[in-house]
Image 1 (cartoon, one colour):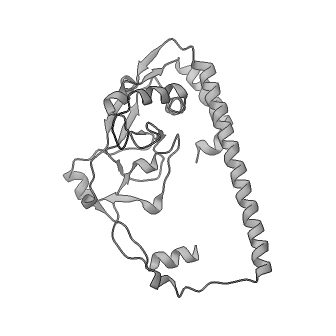
Image 2 (cartoon, one colour):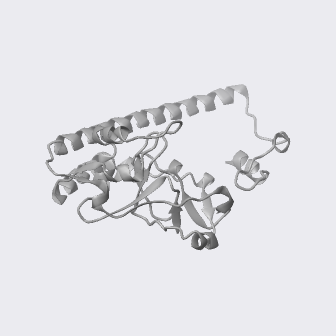
Image 3 (cartoon, one colour):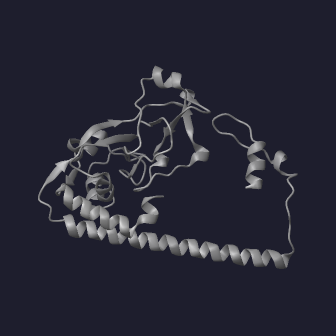
Amino acid sequence: DKFFDYAVSRSAGGLSPRVKWEHLKDYEFDLPSIDEQRILADKLWAAYRLKESYKKLLTATQEMVKSQFIEMFAACKKHVSLSSLCNVFQDGDWIESKDQSETGIRLIQTGNVGNGIFKDKGEKARYISEETFNRLNCTEIFEGDILVSRLPDPVGRACVMPIGLGKCITAVDCTIIRLGDKILPEYLLWFTRTPDYSMQIKKVLSGTTRLRVSRANLGNIQIPLPGIEQQYEFCKIAHQADKSEYYN
């Protein structure tokens, strides 16, 4: 943190600040003996191995929950289009670099949309001013809204907007979803992790250098729609199995 703070304090630039080598070369830091370095390195590697083991556990947990989803809903007879389940189903705003500012209203980008989770990346956050928001007639997004990234790979990944970010908008390559009362957000998010969803997305991809899904094709994706009580039952299982990642 000390080194990072030092580098940031000497960086320059607007949208893409950077630090020059000449400003870093005189940075001084504590240099313990080789024996002390070996002890510290062993501890760091142990922490790294623990982290990797935890990631494998999370992956196994995800696969278990996906399997549970398929077991419970593979035979569901009722399927409806995604857009028909939404009170709001629209893309974000076209925001060019010249429209961005250092502070203000947060611009959520495709890089913030993880596969079922929101990736904050606060250090790389982009913003627009209130004046730009009004001039471009931007669409505000709210906590609880679902964002679907229409590119890049994996196309169609989705996350829920978390609390605490303040006023936000999103980029044009993200589709904003505000669901009605027939489907739970957690249920929809887990469906976007299933092979059924991935297969439907792959069938409607377009583009040459960068594959993407259009909003119209995304809206036509067929969602199995069991009763709300069954959805609650599944979501309860998912919460119990995967609390650590769901609340990340």
